[in-house]
Amino acid sequence: MTQRAKMIVDKDFIIGQVDDRIYGSFIEHLGRAVYGGIYEEGHPDADEQGFRKDVLELVKGLQVPIVRYPGGNFVSGYNWEDGVGPVADRPRRLELAWRTIEPNWIGFNEFMDWCGKAGTEAMMAVNLGTRGIDDARNLVEYSNHASGSYWSDLRRSHGYETPHAVKTWCLGNEMDGPWQIGSKTAVEYGRLASEAGKTMRLVDPGIELVACGSSSRTMSTFPEWEATVLDLTYDTVDYLSIHQYFGNQKGDAKNFLAQSVGMDQFIHTVISTADYVQAKKRSKKKIHLSFDEWNVWFHSHDHDRKLDPWSIAPPQLEDVYTHEDALVVGCMLISLLKRADRVKMACMAQLVNVIAPIMTRNGGPAWKQTIYYPYMHASVFGRGQVLVPLIQSPKYDSADFTDVPYVESVAVYNEEKSEVTVFAVNRSLEEAIPFEIDLRSFGAASIVEHIVLENDDLLATNMEHRPDQVQPHADGRSTMDSSGKLESILNKASWNVIRLKLQS
Image 1: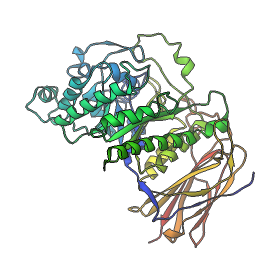
Image 2: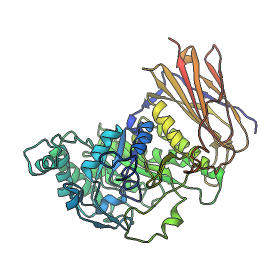
Image 3: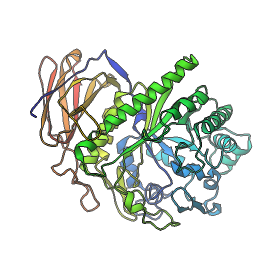
Image 4: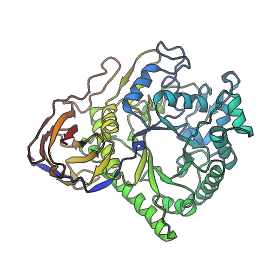
């Protein structure tokens, strides 16, 4: 192949400002995400509330700005009142989404405490499966109203004098999916979401609302679902949610690494549909996207079918991620950044143990999975303005896509720090690719570092006994000339972070 790739970026050509919440994550009452994940009473590293401090430190390393809670499929059968008040008085419930026992040791207030310790905010989801308008408005009152009403005073009696002031609320979860408890047609859901959202806003006019979009682009109702739901909710909601997971069940690495092309197409179609509804309604309002479930997920599918039901926090959906998976996650992050003008929130699903960048052993250590690194790099270094990337790259065809660029890349300009960061993935499994980046509009710059995540074994993983088998190094090959041209070598099957300091 031995071809070069090129990219031109200009500081005056901007896609959009990165909303920090694009680097959000997700904690659901599923498997060991909560019990044995963020919380494990009696663990040697647990704090006074039972939260694992080792996990908190790894979460802080990701600089996660917002975390979606408590689901996910879980929320469609959840009574939020079960998780408040004295823990000894809380009921144990049959949890029907994942067929476990929910002990309710952790609920809304404890999760808000954890968010404070983790330096993050909550994105709360309300149950529009088995419940509806009344319970949704009661939860907003419990959470956000100061005092002087039944639910706000109940919160105060539970030891939380100050309102939690949760800003972002999801109106249900994946209501288009037949697997969802209380799933609905687009018309049924759109009417309920509109009325629930309207009522929640009467309690707190300052909240923002997320309507359920399609659970994936493969749903038979996509994108008609979006068109119908937005037609019914357009004046009420601020965001439309979309979800997407990718897998490599067939062991076709070239096709797997191309999957983010489908993510690009998904985002484009949803934006087009939202803009069609805007035009139809002659509205000045622009609907933004909340990509609040995304990740690689396929390793654990067969294992979870064999689990016995009705236990507390069994190991569910515990994908062990490979280097190959980390490259796909890197490409997905680039896809989100390329539409920073419209994708304003996103949540990697999930944060700990369940299809997650962080893994733990009950009673033992916590460690970073391979996918931790691109997520961390994007979150830490990808704040600012996303620049329009003009890219020339050699291409290939895969089983699902044609003209897949070997080099996927985007650049983010942080004016406050006088930095430009280039994120790039080389999808080639055989060759390094020279990558020329034209940054002349920025004037003189110097290379801070060129971070590379690579491994000769695409299937290499990080496990408890060898947690550092896949980890980045800072020995990337990049040079900068006086004219503002950056020359980099992108090693085969690699994730690259090239950080530049602009000269004043």
